[in-house]
Image (tube, rainbow, N blue to C red; front, side):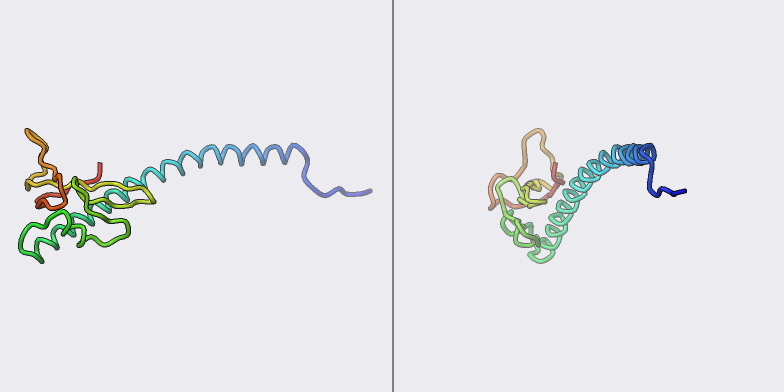
Length: 127
């Protein structure tokens, strides 16, 4: 009598089906994690700019300009633009908005900075 070793075809099909179900569950969760990571990176960079704003105020004893603020932010791809501080996240540029009023209000008139030489009194999160 010879004993055959190995798996039957039905056992292999069941294993493949189970792996397919697990992959169908894991892939959408992985995509959602990427979106969550981008949101967290945006909040982190906004926080870094806000911290740099506080340090710049303490250091200069006055509100910094957009250009001055960009110098206080550490990181690659950081630059002063008229409407705020441009930062790079995963190769994509985002702008952390800066405002000329201390409340970051956009009404009744828009108070966002429009040039790199304007004084920054408030920093908001990346939209």
